Image 1 (cartoon, helix red, strand yellow):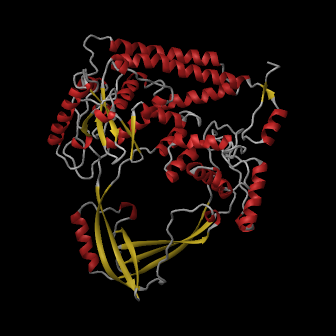
Image 2 (cartoon, rainbow, N blue to C red):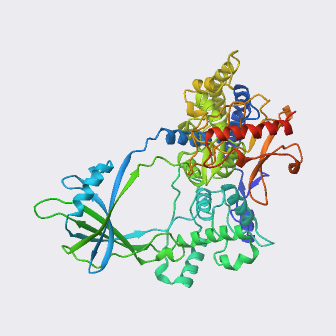
Image 3 (spheres, helix red, strand yellow):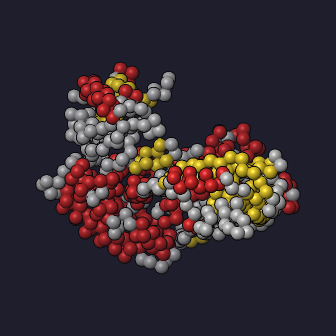
Length: 600
């Protein structure tokens, strides 16, 4: 142990590496214990539970994981919330007012003799009655209020916030973000590393970096744009010894290295550089004007409309970080001034339920509840995507039928174990205690192993029952106490289709007739199923292959030459505006042709 030293550095630069080697210290044994404990947990779930899951669902290869399975649970839980949500109707009423040829818009927000918090227009009848009264009313300016609002810049990037921002701003997947960040960290074409280590949950900056940022801001924008800030991690158990993701040299601007980088590297580096520098810039200052237009009189309460406009007074950090905020101004009016009603419009609305996670918001949720670590966010999402447990469609993460079956099965048996978010968070807390020398790793791993024994035994018992048949979707859904667990009401284009002569996996319930706004509908029966099985066991599949020349998908045999094994255009059975019955017939024609071409 005395002969082994521990050297740490967060950037691949000559100065950082030399300093690290000169100050090498002892190996941190508690951190080693935490690393070993983490690997043991992963193997216990991965080796033991995965094997039993395969037997239970009679599919292979399936996998369960200490981090991947709760992450999948987040997706399927959100889908259940969406399915359970019942939209409620309400109506908005908007109006245009004018005075001296100056026009502005307002939205009704208060009714006579009704408190603002109880304001609601429930149906078209109520909306029409209100509209008719408003048309005959006279209006004036009840109040004008001007408030100033200050906005702070965001902290420098952590792994999670970088992945989220790159997804939102650059449409870059978490895995692509980490791959490009790794290349920037290692250095391009002989250059030393361009950014610090990209797996961190700390937003702190070194004193040297802050001095460089100060100089950059003063030289580029002037004194009034600089404001020193110290950022601390908001998430629990953040590893403060790490720095935020930042450029290794602030003087190395994005434009100065653009010629060395490809498009994605450049955009990511620019994102990191701008965020780092902006974090030490002054607040932006916005002036909000709120105008209340009312039909009230001294004798009675009336209808009130609200109009708002924002004006940027001082840009501050927004000089560097461009936002999508829109700034405008209201006409120059005075309180008690009479205005004319020019136009009124009622609009039907419905309350919106929870939306599906994007990859960015899924990472944010994982971070919030303590699932995984910065180093595992991207790889976890890639894993459940590659295993077809989830699909990414229009930047939204959807649970697949297979994902529902896996998540539902694991939830049933392991809801008090690693599938429980509080349990998972406690595991992460305990791993941090081990790394701090506060908890013995042997006892921790032994306790976890023993906690798996009973649910694993129950899963095995169910799988060994003579009448247990997971291929019967009704039986499986009944057992899991949730029809939505394996039969979601939405439908997706598959990447593979199992030959109909082979034993099907899990049934999918199709929706009703297509509408023009629906995504392409997968029409499948119990004999026509979307599950890729183990080719080594002799199962033959038809795959959806994208044609380069026109971007269309078609079905082909994976074990034959693609050019000569086309078995049907997917557009023939999955498309917009086609009746379900017609789509089923088209699919059956394609499947028959596929059987003849591909299956033994």
